[in-house]
Image (cartoon, helix red, strand yellow):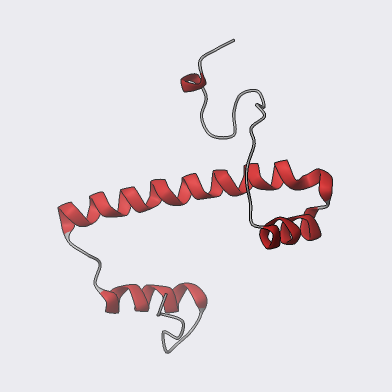
Length: 92
């Protein structure tokens, strides 16, 4: 079997682990996907979190080199993307 380092997130064979979740979190997941869909749901959630972590690292590296983004420019681009003329929803 290949080393775990050979696989990117989402690739490779499945491997079982034990995960502890708050009862309310598990109930909410099961309500969405059923009892048999929990593993697939958690796999997708973990992949999304890895993507977000990687993006956060990229943004931090960019900020070190170029400084933080101008809030007014971000609001203007957000308004353009969302079709909002006043930049509503600019607060994240």
